[in-house]
Length: 251
Image 1 (cartoon, rainbow, N blue to C red):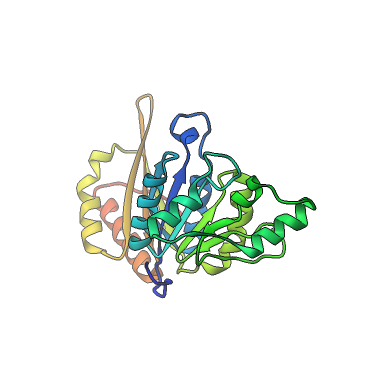
Image 2 (image 1 turned 90 degrees about the vertical axis):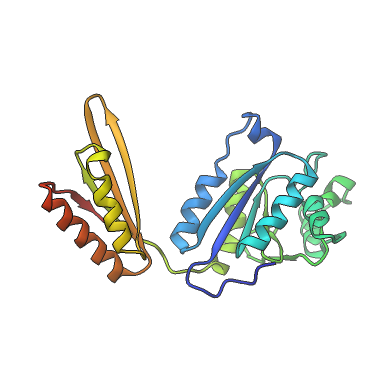
């Protein structure tokens, strides 16, 4: 598994699990939420993969992501029913058995105040070696196996449990500047290539929009280095002025 991130730009991957997502019966809202949260924390979300309720596919994808990225998040498949197989799949992928997590079992006993059924215990059997992330406000703490955070698919629960994980994730936030132009993208494509080549620490994006015969273009400049970002923005503006264009800038 990848070690805990120590550099300024930790990477992450998200594995969304469920036939209901792939069939369109349920719309995935956890991915957009996580994108925004990780970006604000300075964590680079590098890949999102949606897989069916298939233990082999889940386990293979999670293991692959775990080796590739600092952090992995899963969404879905941790409930009491027959198609909730994420714990089992991750355990199988890493070659470890399932084991009752005492903290989760105790939380369920405290909540239900009745003998636990097999369905309850199904939610307490996690990959052996897992730990929980404690937070007072969360009744059932999220499970962490190495660098993999195993989260539920229900959006309200996903967000609640992410709140327990959030303090563990830290990078240098990405700074963003936007420049808006009323031109066709092709008119500034070469100019943008030159800016991109001259400022390797800045990511340049170009996003056209069309409304009838009106063409607008949003250019984004992103960097963790404020000085590099400022230099790239100044270079872009100079080049635009050189061809008679002036963009409206927004930070």
